[in-house]
Each structure stands twice: as structure tokens, then as C-alpha cells.
Image (cartoon, rainbow, N blue to C red; front, side, top):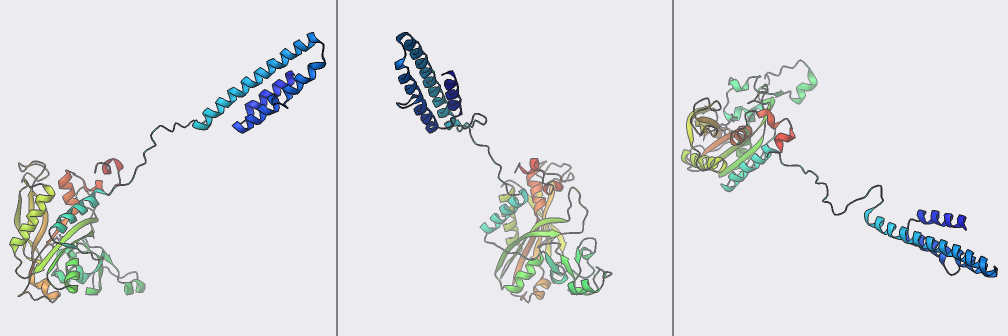
Length: 353
Ligand code: DAH
């Protein structure tokens, strides 16, 4: 009997479902079970002996029944909370997983785009690789202009030259055939004017490249947004109104800006726009070199010589153009003093935007 009891306990503890447990119960305690059979077998024994054995069997019956009940409630609990080794509390909040964000430069780019879309501009794009013609010549940048210098421009060998000789000089001998990584977004102006007749009102965001050492305010790849409007009777006053509106939307309506005469080959007259230094509020600091003003962008009225390259009648049409660096605007807006922070993928920096 003791053996049988031991065996039943083992089976109960190993039962993994309520069904298995029920089978065990029937095996031992059922009407045709082992215990009932044992009880019927003792009926032939003498009275005293029968009483003794009967009690023993009934005790075992009791123990088995208790053991089954215990296991039953154990299994019930486990089926809710998993196995005892790995309890899962389904009421705990899940682990949050991090989703990516738009890079601060692209966020700012989108903001600039939105402002100009609101002013009636549409978005245009151009290739990152340009011929010398689009990047320089058609923008009235003369052959001897310093920005053509090998130090500022990444030259790419034209395909035919590539195959011929490795010693091919990157300094132009082939003239217009030369391919460069665009040094500014201004060549998009030419592409747009070649393919469309006025009125034109576009902005062209994109990457630009310069042969430049990296430091706190320089990079060999950066971003610009170009603007171009051409129509009859466009004046410098239109340019001022559009840029003034942009600056107020981007930096706040109290920010002062000023137009300062400047020079660009593709605009005449040309200007640079300065804005009041946001860091010292115009009183003078190291960022604005004690002047109270910081340079924001270049602009001007489209040079009639540029119109000649795209066969626009400069007696009929006038236009304005502007170009600005996105990194520069981001640095001014967020008070960032090192451009490299935008490119280093430091999550602690990026998460702030
Ligand atoms: N392309 C000039 C640069 O990269 C910026 C610029 C100045 C663009 C004047 C313009 C402009 O369209 O009118 O420095």
C-alpha cells in the first residue's frame, strides 16, 4: 500500500494538465480504481484486521485526494502566469522601443520648404554632378574666377578621359566637358529656365560639395536652398519682401535684418542679408564678431547675362535669386557653434531635436 501511495504522489506531481490529473484521480479513486478494489478485497478479513486495514486504506485515499487538489490549484495558477521559471506579469507595461527621427538638418530643410511653399513657390531639384557649364559658365562665373580653383571644387574625370589615362589632369583643358560635384544649388536655376518659360517661382533644396577642410564652420558636403523668381516687372522690392517674410517666419517677428551690397557674378545688383545676432540680441559677442549682425544668405536680381544663356528676353523679364546654407541657419537658430555635430551621429545630440 505504501508503495502504491508513493507511486500515486509521483504521478500527481508530474501531471502537467488538468486532464492528466483527472485520469490519475480515476485510476486511484474512481469506482473501478485501485483504492476501491483494495477496499473490496479486505471484506474477507476478520473484523479486527478489517477495521485496521480499512482505516489505513481510507487514510491513503484521503492523502491522494488532497494531493490531487493541491496540484489542481497549482496548475491553474501556472496556466495564467506561465511556468514557474519565467513568470510573466501581463499587467506590466511593455518595453518601449525607440523609433527613428528626422535628422535636425532635414527637419529644418522641411521648415524652410514649408515657408516658401506658403509664399507660392514650388520645389525643384537638380543633379549633384554638374558640367562646368551649369555650375559656372551659364551662371556668368568667368573662366578665371577664383571659385573655379581646384581648391574649392571637386572635379570628376569625364568618362572618355577615365579610360584613356590615369595621368589626366583634373584642371580643365577640355573646358565645358568637365564634370564637377556642384559647389552650390545655383545651377538648378539654369536647368529650370532652360526647360520652362516665365513666370517661374521655385526653390531648390539639395546637397553641395566643396574641396574644403572640415572645421567648426566648414564641411566638404553641406546643404543649400536656392530660390528663383522670374516674371515681368519683378523688382528688388519683391525680393526684400519675400526674404523679410521668410526671416520673420523662421526666426521670429521681432528679428531685425538688413540688406548689404555684395557681389555675385549671377546677380546684378547683389546683396547679402544679415540678421540681428540671436545670441547677444545685437549688442555684440564672439559669434557675431562684436558687430551685432550675422550673415544669413546671398541674393540679388538675376544678371541679364544669365538670361542670355537660357534665351530669356531680358528686356521683357526680370527676376531675383537667393541662396542660403541650411547648416548655417540651423546653427543660428539653435545656437550651435560647431557644424561637425550635425554629421557625427551622436544620439545624445540628435535626440534634442
Ligand atoms: N550660390 C551662392 C553660394 O553658394 C549663393 C547665392 C548668392 C545664390 C546669390 C544666389 C544668389 O541665388 O543670388 O555662395
